[in-house]
Amino acid sequence: MFQILSFSSILLYAFSASAVLSTDAEKAASFYKSPQSLFPSGQVSRSALEDKIQTTELEIAFLTNWDHKSFLLQGDQVLRDIQLAKYARTRSFVQLLRENKRDAIPVKNLEAKSEVEIQQVETYWAKVVLKNKEKTVGWLPLHTLQALHDDTGVFINLIDTYLRSEPKMASGIMTTIPRMRRIEPLKIEKGFLKVRYEGNTGYADINHFVAKADFANLAYHSKKGWVPILHRNNDFAVTASKDLLPLSEIKGYATNETRGIVVKAETGYGPQLRSRVEIVKPEACIWAVSNLKGHGDVWWKYKDLLLEYNKPGKNTLTTEDLMKREIYSIAFESKTSLKGLVSAEGIYRTEDGQNWTELPQFGKQNYPVNIHPTGVWFIGSFKSMDKGKNFEPFIRWDQIAEAIESAYHRNPKILRLTQIDALPNSQVQINVDTGLKKVKLRSTLSGGAWTVVH
Image: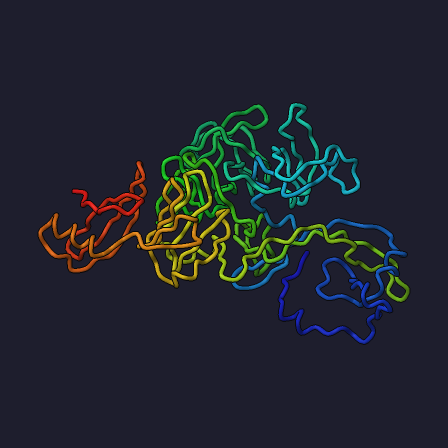
């Protein structure tokens, strides 16, 4: 079992005087008493270890944050978003393999962005079917796949779950679904999943399952478009504005790749079942066992198999970070696009719905934002015709004041822009708070006169 890992303890550690020193510093490798050892027993040249290899073994681990502390969790303790996906695409060129082994026979070469259907997942591997005429089947490493936004995914139960004849707890039990089964529901209703399992059609308690919604930062609703999501509550997704969206009405998710759900609890203090952890660093290593004189059998990391997670750069936030702020306004290019703008203690843009880059010229202000179907960006009283490269004013406040005074025969006390809406026929509508009344005004994208909407 893995022990709780503290970064401070690693930083304070010093190699013992008895450690074997490498004669080839550039190719030195640390070795351990076991893969679970927190600290290495010493170092030796990589070539010396390779000459004495006895066996190799694949191990998956995740350095995670939970409750403001660091924990090293085994791969089978953490469920990730890609394991809930039904459909995915390849991140880059990769070989489809006949078996879930690194040295298995290649079946087919896949180009980047090849779409596959996931049939089965393990800690490191996914069994997939290609979307081609032959329906080619093979295995891919999970980290080579990326979830699709228009996929609602599957459900995985964390505990053994009764399949009942009706969607209520008092109904009869038909069979038991063993834990960690990938289930694609026929319907979601009344806190239950209607599913078919081993020839039986019945209802399973949705609270026993992890869903793709548990990893969602954004959810796509057919009427509301992309909506920021805080968390899942039973068969609802809770939005940033605390509204409840039924899971049955959601058509897709933008998920957080650095989030994990604990499926095996730590003994004692540590992440418990269903805990949501932040994955700081994933590791997939081929561990080799070599026999060293004076040390016997030792373990060392023969090969690192995982790609690193993409971390946001300077002036960039993840959607997870944004959700910790109050979102004043958010807009996407279209209902199906994840390219958009958000106002949340500053103005940020995104290309993928996951990472948001600050537009520094707007400081830490909260302004209403909108993206017109023609491609024009609106941020506060400014507009951009070239997707943020240049901005120019699109509101003249003297004209706004004159239009309001003409319509209501009263001078406005204040003029505060609260909302921007895109309209058909190259028009735009704004909401202005005058202190006494909230007024709607319309104009054209070209900057024509403003007209009060009664």
